[in-house]
Image (cartoon, rainbow, N blue to C red):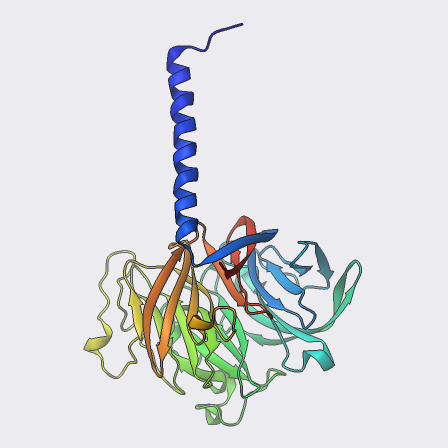
Length: 375
């Protein structure tokens, strides 16, 4: 039997020690969590999820696949009829939500990046009727009800998060597409929070409804890359967005409000060019919280369940660069970071389950669906 050279043996030993140390660190980290984390399924670049009335879920994969998932067994089956997506960079299949009357009409909404003419791309929102079956299911009556205007050649900052508000209206976050100035351009729906009727038409009480065109869609402006929107129990809309080099934001969204980007920010441009802070321009609305170093926020819920009773009314934000969950307490119109939970992986999506569990989707290939429950 050949002997292992001393240098190789030492390297192997160090490797085993390193693995053991990593495992010990992970065990310590999990001991500090106020919850258990149970893996339920694994996906290819998952991006968003929503629960169906029967407790199963829909999960989007960025490459263009919509899955119907039994979250207890992990069984996941494809749903046919998803619109073609422009996959690449930050683009692909995005958010998925249910119509408020889903139990009666079976209508769902999907956001995604779509290809335009001449290589340009932009986000779109489609609604469709969902038919489930033993083989997964299919979409019918697919109709595009909203598009980003204009399209650009880049593959970043689509944002395209979706939510239905207590008013029954459809809310859409639209990123600036890394083009900066559209966020202040009232003839563009980029860098904005938008409010539509469930069929894509414009409500007559929108702040700029009398202007017509895409301007009529606008609820607020001056956003950069808003990757989370959620309503609290009082009907207030909260939003988070990625800042440039520093300055991630958590905002309370006001009707007709201007949040300043790219005129102001708590961060700087990636090339080092400074951006004035919000306090230099009081006409722009400052964030309730800003983060430097950044957390790279993605996914947002405002918890309303009983399983984590002490957290009822708190916001939970997924962290990509932070690699965990950030908990924020809300007190009326004010917000304060309360805790961070290091999960050791990039978190793309956060959702509240029907039983009050908190569910998170890890980002990237092999991203897991984790169920968080009280210990």
